[in-house]
Image: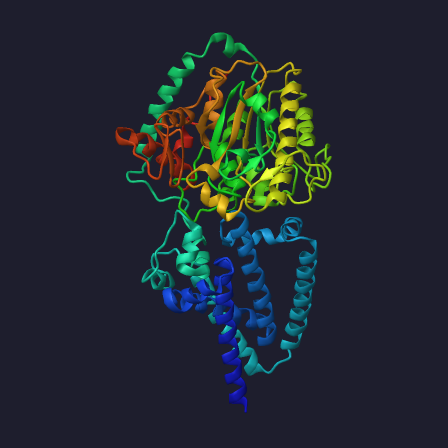
Amino acid sequence: MKKLIYGLKAVGVLALVLISNLYLQWCQNNLSLDLALKFAFSWHTEKFFLGGLVLLALLLFLSGVIGSLGMGAVLYTVFIGILGYADYLKMTMRQEPIYPDDLKMAANLGMMKDLVGLPLFLVLLVVILAVLVGMGYMFWRSLKKPKNIQILRLVTVVLSGGLLLYASNFNSSSNLLRKGYDRTALWIPYSQKMNYYNVGFVGGFLYNLKVEAMEKPKGYSEAAVKEITERYQKEADAANEEVKEEVKEEEQPNIVYVMSESFSDSNRLKGVTVSGDPLKDYYEVANQTYSGQMLSQNYGGGTANIEFEALTGFSMEPLNAQMTTPYTLLVPKLEKLPSLVSLLKDSGYETTAIHPYDTSMYKRKDVYQVLGFDQFLDQDTMTHRDKLENNPYISDESAYEEVLDQLDSDTPQFLHLVTMQTHMPYNGKYSNISYQVTAEGNNDSIANYAQDVAYASEALKNFTQELSKLSRRTIVVFWGDHLPGIYSDATQAANTGTTLHETEFLIYDSAGKLANTASGQITSPFYFAPTLFQQAGQATTGFYQLLLDLQKVLPAFEKSMYYQNGQWQATASLGDKESIYKDYQMIQYDILAGKQYSLASDFFARENE
């Protein structure tokens, strides 16, 4: 009888693992059972069962720790259920799968509630609490089990835990599990969406575990880095000599970065028409200054990556594909990271970051300390916290008032604002909407979004007008981080190429002294700082001179998106200018993954003004 019971339990465990693996594939494949079954039993059977082995180890580990196979199965089922649903939501909203580092976001209950809605959030909360209580009770009961059961339990935990630990080193060249996948897997590092499709959810998830930030460039050495820094520093010194003496003698201007959540123009998309002009106020400012489109790495998300690029001058393009979010995977581990923040701080600026939301998002609290911010104001420490109608987020108008308070100082200020007003979800934010939408699907969301960006445009225009009242010159770099993930599949299909990756940007000078006021520029966020100094007639650095030289060759680029000679292409053709990109790649590796040889020089510093 016991053998029968054990046999049934074994069959039950294997069935649970099989069903849960299929469930993850079902969620990954937009709830297509046909695709999930074909992946498992026709196209990628070997990879499916390798993933099942990892899931089996997870189930046994949980059961061993709790001391109950039944309770372990319940916990496993709840975890896999939530994981798959989260993957489906992220794929729907952002066209991106769940990454290992996304699991840290589960602690942000406010964001989880906003994403899934209050009713489902409360149900999940009750289920999780019930499981936790059950776990505690079963663990307490398990301590009273016979010695032979405890030994079996310990062996189970050690073996399954060891397998999970081994699997976590998936990207090691000697990892046998990785070699098992490599027998049939076609890895697609430039598209994690396709990567998960091709190797399965478990394989894709493992692929995005800990990894080196970048591959070491050929010829990397202290001498090679020194040669690069000295060469571009000479260029920077020569450029700085041309800076007018009267500019050098002026007081340093305030500098304000504004990364506007999901700010973009829906009317630029094929198949979408929004009546009126939600961005009217924005264009009144943009058409009079240096402005255009910015290339965003992602569609529907990726805020922290765009912020990383804008503040550091380092692109996501040379990074390993698994380095999906440097803010969480890389930056907190660095003791020193040169950035616009540290540069201005060394130049006598006070540096403040403002984000009208939770500090836990993307580890910003830790990241901002590494970058060198003097203070970080969030939704709990801001003075101005007003909201618009049913919008759950602090308004842009309030955020700008917070910035203006900080600018009221005798010391030059660097303010970095990351707005939240235009963050999803959009439905139901506004009862009075001034815009009519013609599009295929999601019209309510697009209409609310249009009203959102209209309010954001108005707030920006009013903000720039207030800056003219300040005695100190103030320069603003404003950009949208990415498009919102609200457009239908048909709309996305009609806007291939870079269209879904192009947002609005401008550089505004309260003194009206920018060197080039032409609009229609194409750029990437890592060019913002060197462009700012060049346009405003300010001294530059060796590193920013390298970026300016690279910008002449590649005005904008990300993986599979390269803007050259006025055209977008899937690969870069640099010819005799390839050495500039290699110099940039060498410096980026040196700082993010190498020995940081370049910090021994003044390569990232400006001359004293």
